[in-house]
Picture 1 (spheres, rainbow, N blue to C red):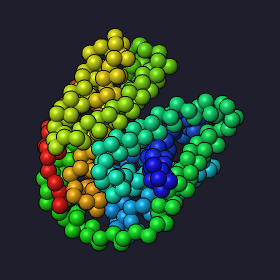
Picture 2 (spheres, helix red, strand yellow; picture 1 turned 180 degrees about the horizontal axis):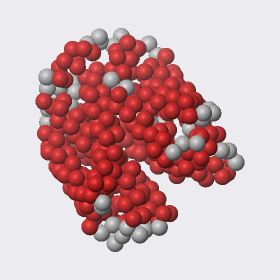
Picture 3 (tube, rainbow, N blue to C red; picture 1 turned 45 degrees about the horizontal axis):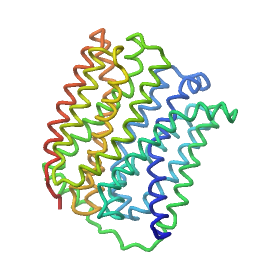
Picture 4 (cartoon, rainbow, N blue to C red; picture 1 turned 90 degrees about the vertical axis):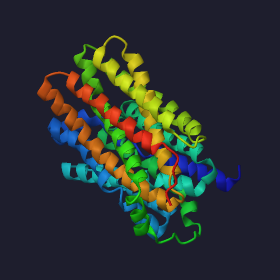
Length: 387
């Protein structure tokens, strides 16, 4: 591999690794954060909610930035702003905590959206492979951050502020690796953003892809938020409940790497949508019927299903449009709606739990959402070309 290609690949992968640690890394530290800053449980949970909402609200900034300065420079800007937000979040006071969280999430929202366009621009002949690689990097970054910060806190003697601020280091390292790519002279990006959005809005395929992205995000964040509580109420010890959640995250890494490579070789991704949705529904059903009987099996099944669904959503976003401009526009629409739906999911799930007094109603509702996800994926997965 030529040095330039190796640098491009390294910068791309490290950038992808930075797309989740700022969110996932906060959860293990949340109890310490609440005690130190003086937050109620609702206010502590709102930190993550603010970040997920920002992922949806600020995603549409990405096509505007990409049209003005190009995809590569937008990615560099996102990494720098991400490091800044992480640093702000570690400063004293609740204002800096929430402000930093919002700044970091805004950067992640922009980078989330442009990554499929970067794949289409730099790896047009290997969209399926590179989609699998970067989605696996995203999931791996979340798993590493959620599992490493507490041991790192004990090892270094830092408090939550110091150890969470360390998450800015890989973001700055990725920015340095990507800097030569961003400084290269590029052809001026075509200024067809409004017409690109107009084309997408008139296409049914856009709405199918958006629905599939949104519904699979909904089912993922619901389980991310509530699985440990479900297992605890089923009589599983707290430490094992945490391990079970980690297990489903680890399983997702393999699914996100393999599925896009296989599905990208086909003109249609419909059968992969069927299988991934069926596995997700089976995981929900297992947790509903027998949460304490075979929990490890349910987590493996759920992890494969949800990891495959996430990877398929991003692969379809990269495959359907004819050029990187349209890819970025479609990614902005699909991911903005997706993360706004995802932000509502845990709240609706909790309300159903409160009203029904048990987990049957919310989990049955989750299975119904997976059914809607399957229908949307059937339409989105069929061969089509936008533009």
